[in-house]
Amino acid sequence: METPSQPSGPSPALFFQTVNAHQRTEVLRTAIELELFTAIAEGLQTSGALAKRCGASERGVRMLADSLTVAGFLNKENSEYTLTPDSKLFLDKRSPAYLGATMDFMLSQPLVEGFKKLTGAVQKGGTVVSDEGTTEAEHPEWVTFAHSMVPMMKGPAGWIANWVSQNAPQTRKVLDVAASHGIFGVEIAKKVPETEITALDWANVLTVAQENAEAAGIKDRFHTLPGSAFQVDLGHGYDLVLLTNFLHHFDVPTCEAFLKKVHASLNKGGQVITLEFVPNEDRISPPAMADFGLIMLATTPSGDAYTFTEYDRMFRNAGFNNSEMHDVPASNQRAIITQK
Image 1 (cartoon, rainbow, N blue to C red):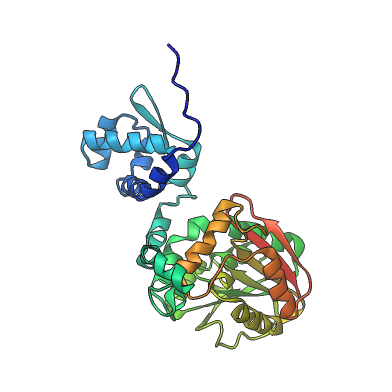
Image 2: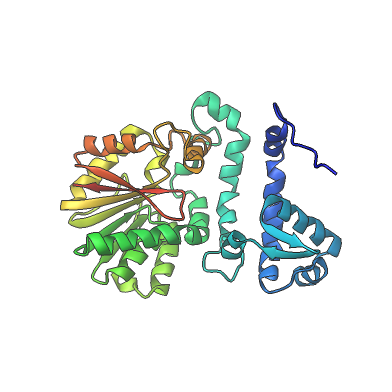
């Protein structure tokens, strides 16, 4: 018997996949809440066994697990489910790379509401949820971000720490702007034991960073600078300034004005490491980096996913010398290294 061939030509498949994307989000959220992936990692593979472990009906678990298999999160053979390599690494709660907690921020009210009102944002050219969106002073969701995003940032933070230890081992004084969870500074402090880290963020967010610094055993070298990055005195004498996931929230003039402030805080020959979603010059590739611009449209008044050419121009206009870009392994982000 011949297998029916796939239709060629126009298809409504993409339309329906996109319209129904919210359903897939809820499928994943439910599986994470029930700890389904962790249960499978523990060796439970049938819907009956999983139902008992997850406190759910066998019928419900079977349908949920089948949907996850269709979506590519699970494998199924002879009514038994197993994890894909990605699910084993990122969705088993026992894994150090577990990403389940990131959903607290990624599905938080400001992001979800921003996209519900996307038509208005497109018409206006910026978020319509509030005047300042997520750039509002001491926005409570940044505490959620700090608590939930460490697993996603561990890899890039490790890459940056390795780069510093290999290429700038003389680094002694580091400013971490919008430090959030503090992991970037913490990883550098662990890799280069002589460094002192100053973490700048809102006071309510810095409590999370301090907890992580204490847990890492570097609290004596971890200092805090609460307040707005645009208003506080940054100090001076830094060998390195970290700008991780910060500049994309603001328009170009605001970024350039702040970069001049950063320039003044650095020692001669000091460096800035910027971690960002940096799309190619066509602004449509790679997809995950290019898509980030729309998140800024929905949630901020004037943020964007800037290209390397745009970042390089901002730094030069602020008085810096050359910048170079690096792809960060196992990440949707790129690092830009800039010299004073």
